Length: 289
Ligand code: SAH
Image (tube, protein in one colour):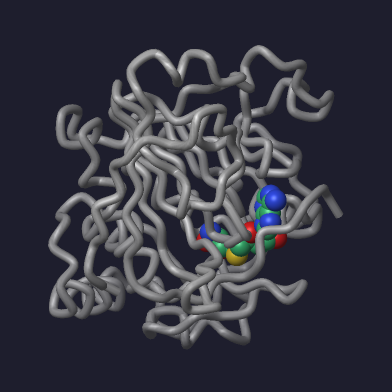
C-alpha cells in the first residue's frame, strides 16, 4: 500500500446524492450534510432493531477446541508476528499491542492453525477469507490516525462490516470502547459467536444482517471499517460516520479495474476521500444468506 494520496476536496455537483462512486465523494459545503437523508431517520429493517445480546452472553452451540501441542498458545509466537509487523513499518503501538493479545489460531480451522501467525490470508469457509495480518494491521493503524482517535487515544464506537471469523472484531474491541460487527452469512456469524464466546474485553456485539445498511440505531460511529469491497461506498456508511471520524474500506477502482483501499474522513465541512494502494478483498454483497 502507501500509494500516492490524491487530494480530493472539491464541491459536488448541485443536487448530488449518496451513494456516489468515490470519484465523486467530496467535501460538501457547510450545511449541505444536514440536508442529506440520515439513516437514523429511516425505519431500520426489523432484524437490525432486534436487541442484540452481548457476545459474552450468547447461547453457544459448540466450542472450537484450541489446538494443543502446537505451541501456539505461547505469547512468544504472537510476539514474533508483532515484530514482523513492526519491521514492515506498522508503528501504531496500540494496534501492535492488540495483535500481541489476540490468539489468531483460535479463529481459524484447526487444520490451518499452524499457519495462523504467518503473514497470509486464510480461508474461513463459504469462499471467504481472513485477511493477512499485515493488511489488517495497516487498516487498523489508518483508523487510529483519525482526528477522533488522535484526540481520544482510542477508536470510540466502531462499526465493522464483515465479521467473518471474528478475528478483526476481537482486535477492534481492544482498540475501541464499543464495537458492532455485522455479517451477512449466518454460518459465519454463528462461527464468530462461537470463537468469541467468553470474550470479555470491551463491549462487542455481533449482528446478522446486511452491513451495507450500517446499523443506524447505534450511529454515529467514530470509525467504520469494511472487510469486503463494493462498487461504491453505501450511503448509510457515510451518513453514520461521526464528524471527526474515519472510514476505511476496500472499493472498486474504475481506473485500474481492481480494488483500492479508500479512507474517508468526515469533518464539519463534509467528507474527504483518499485512495491508497491496491488491495484484494472479497466482494461486498447485498442481503443476508
Ligand atoms: N474481518 C473478517 C474478514 C472476513 S472476510 C475476519 O477477521 O475474519 C469479509 C466478510 O464480509 C465475509 O465474511 C463476507 O461474508 C462479509 N460480507 C460481505 N458483504 C457483506 C455485507 N453486505 N454485510 C455484512 N457482511 C458482508
